[in-house]
Amino acid sequence: MSTSAGDAMRRIGNAITPHEPQSTDQIWEIVQLARHQDRPYPLDYIPRLLSDFEELRGDRLYRDDPAIVAGIGRYHDMPVVVIGQQKGRDTQERTYRNFGMSGPEGYRKAMRVMALAEKIGAPVITLIDTPGAFPGADAEQRGQGGAIATSIRTMLRLSVPTVAIVVGEGSSGGAIALGVADRVMMLQNSTYSVISPEGGSAILWRDAAKSQLAAAAFQPTAANCYRWGVVDSVIPEPDGGAHRDHDAAAELLDRYLLRALTELREIPGSERRRQRHVRFRRIGSYRELALADTSAVVSGQTKGPP
Image 1 (spheres, rainbow, N blue to C red):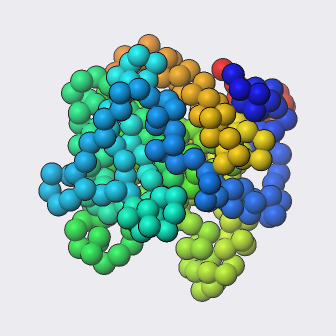
Image 2: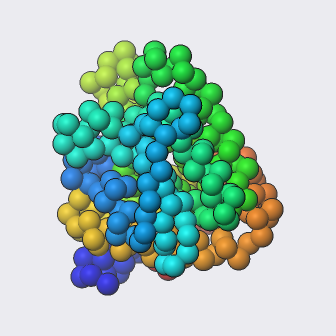
Image 3: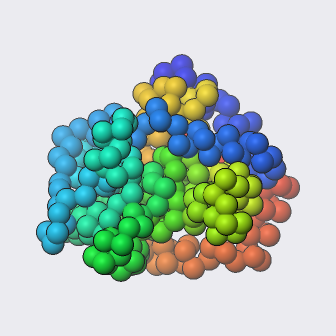
């Protein structure tokens, strides 16, 4: 284990406390870290986690969508399917990948690869990092809403183990389309919400400049998502954020991912699917949230490292 990764693992008890309130400034700082231009993207994690990765392209209906990277590889000597949202590092690549905002063909490509995973019995890993699905008129004309809904349904019905990890920015249905998994995890400085702060402020105040207020209102941080039961685990990051050390960030992610897959492979497929349905129906239950929150505060415990 690298020094950075080891330090982060030792700091987990103090760094991530689900019941500790976060100020407006702290929340906005995390939003900025989630969007940092040097933060590792799926194509940074994949070669650090997988061997023999083979990317698969195209939705077999319209075209390939570079905003979503999908393929098959080997993870700790087991075949897995990986689907990730790729923003792009520089202006040219960001334009090519549409800033990680996929059209319907991207989600259809993802579903095609999910079907392959189901056929060969391989776990599905999704790496979420998007400001949202592409909102253009042409995407809507090609069935954007239907593609997102079908992707959600497809993930709910899979019998193979599924793990979703929010590695950066997870906003709107574009993120949820790849987030309906047996285990959902977030990196410490990632965000997960039904809409981006800019989109929320434009709707609430008719002013996208009030995005910091919107972020403070719906608190999209990993600590809050864990406290509300939206995610199962918060993965620590190297000091200063994942952008400081890609290798250490991948090493920390690897520990949590391996543990999750190891646990899930022991559960029969029909039971995994049943538990998945129960899990997502339970989200938003005020009674269960209140009980879970009280338990966390009384015990003083968080989900620690493997």
